[in-house]
Amino acid sequence: MLYTLEICCDSVASAIAAARGGADRIELCENLAQGGVTPSAAKIKIAKAELNIPVFVLIRPRKADFLYSGLEFEIMLEDIRQAKALGADGIVSGALNADGSIDEARTRQMVETAHPLPFTFHRAFDMCEDAKKAIDLLAGLGVKRILTSGQQPNAGEGKANIRDFVKYAGSRIGIMACGELLPENIGNLLDIEGLTEYHSAARKEVESGMQYTGSVNMGDEAVQDEFRWHEVDEELVKGMRAVLNG
Image 1 (cartoon, one colour):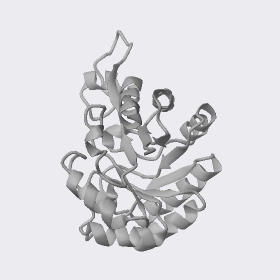
Image 2 (tube, rainbow, N blue to C red):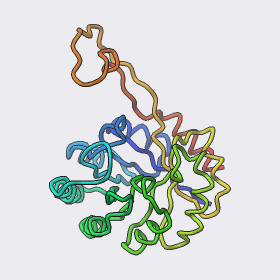
Image 3 (cartoon, one colour):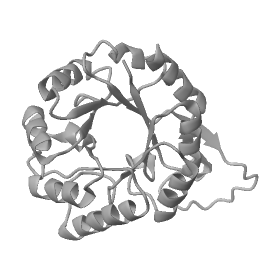
């Protein structure tokens, strides 16, 4: 069995580390601490120049929910067009209605705008009220795959649902598992027949090299928290690659 390992990266440095570790594909974004938002044009351009594996681009205008205003959606469509122009290999996005159903009209428009690039419907799926109805709809719209933790906090807790989703989707649409996957637990999903794609952030904490930190913070975090961040851990990627390779 050939398994695909996708690593979610919010920096080009992380994307390079993921590729060195054996990732098959990158999902490029910004600000993973808030679930990921659309990356800058420069990040897309340079990631494509530095990598020889596919780079899928996340299109998400802000943190929080997936119920978007008309202006936000206009920005999302333009971000898809720009990502395509910059060489993106795939688009990752999603939109919901207030009742927890898939926003069919907007998802169709995003899939059409992304064409001919493959479209991944991200974890907005895990916020859907009716998962199987969502699978039917997304398959009919031409979405290539769905990213899911089985509508649970992580893939371990959602394993039974992931298995159910894979079986229900069949050959109509791909299911890609995610949710705190690491070398020590990714193997627990290998007995799900038909599940061939896995997604992980595989992160480690990085400390700033600054000696003087002052006393003013630039955002909502405590001052000291602004001098640490996360990047992809190449060794974690290697560990997952080894498990998937058997």
